Length: 76
Image 1 (cartoon, rainbow, N blue to C red):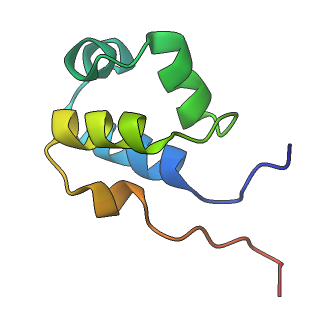
Image 2 (spheres, rainbow, N blue to C red; image 1 turned 60 degrees about the vertical axis):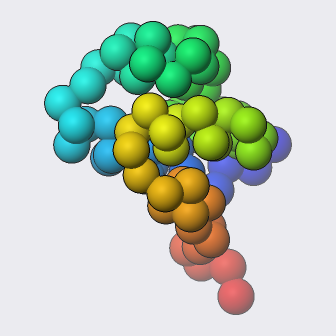
């Protein structure tokens, strides 16, 4: 699998850190397992709609924030 240069995982980490939460706190609040959350933040997995919604609700942000289009650097 090719990692995207920027994606939901970076938005997720930025928003989580702005809330002052650890990944463990987001995991507990969202119901998304800590290992899966780590994989998302590292760009190793891409969340499905259910997981995206759980994370958005926990972080109190619109789902659209986590579904922003991904831009790949150096790709025309």
